[in-house]
Length: 448
Image (tube, rainbow, N blue to C red; front, side, top):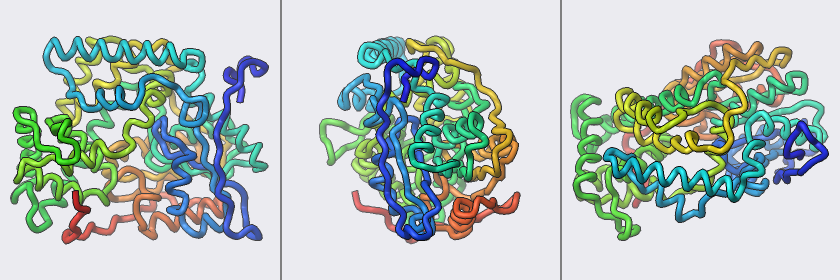
């Protein structure tokens, strides 16, 4: 692809693509392009690990296609820090003292300088608008007259901008776990933190219904207070870590483990078990495994590179501190944790190319937006907003927990309408709601 679409004859970027052919070639409709989110997550790796999680009806009728957007993975990636340097930042508490704040400033200044030194030539060109243009070139290269697409989380943002630029090239788009294009970076972070606070209370309510819940008995407020107590205890004396005795689990380790587990309701039994170990035995191994033994640092660099160009974030240290304080008030367990990494955008060498705005995709056929009512990362109101912005938006509601709906559960009332729409291009009725099947309170969770 052209690095700069304004000068297509100039430098080129390589885009990595992977295709899983349709099972039934005689009934093949075309390609179903996917994006797993991030920004910064690899679509190539996603299809390799999760391609079989798509429903059989889709696997029969479509080639599944994943790609690494520009700046990501195998597509001329943004390079900043190595794995260990990134991991050290993730193991650091949000700053509170003057010394910690100064260290935070030094880290993010060094981080952005490393990004500019190693990837400065591509940083102005990794935004979502350019990635959406790449996706239209990909559509043509695949031989599809119009695009069929399913995007998750940030992938909904990418899909919405595609539809806005190329409405006549849309066949069917599913936007699951919607991000709202109208949000500034500040509004995005406040909503993200608040979403995790909502999810934490939902987890606490689930735990209270199970035998031996480590959060005690009584109200959700008291149960959530037990997690606050664990964070305070770990700040004073970090918990043991049998998985890596060089990394005791402090309050940030507790927060990271809980935060990561809340993404998927299937992790809740394991989180309950990890909290029991931590509260009852002072053992943070389970929380460490939930928080740090997953590929959470893979998009480190690309995540900031795309977001800092896409929308305005707080412009200096004072604005970040103010936002962290406000986020703590609406999300006391996650506010500072969510906000401080975005100090990077205050020092980013490329400023946002445009201001947030509504995305209408006027002229596109029906576009299906899927929103989960207690989604931790992309609050339900964002899905409502996106469906209302899109001239042809149709909202499918999942009354449930976890981030995104289609791939994270087997509810027929979600999978059926999504798959039928992708195959037929006919959306479900407006106002349709799918109610989540309750999680088995006897579920044990995986051992730590």
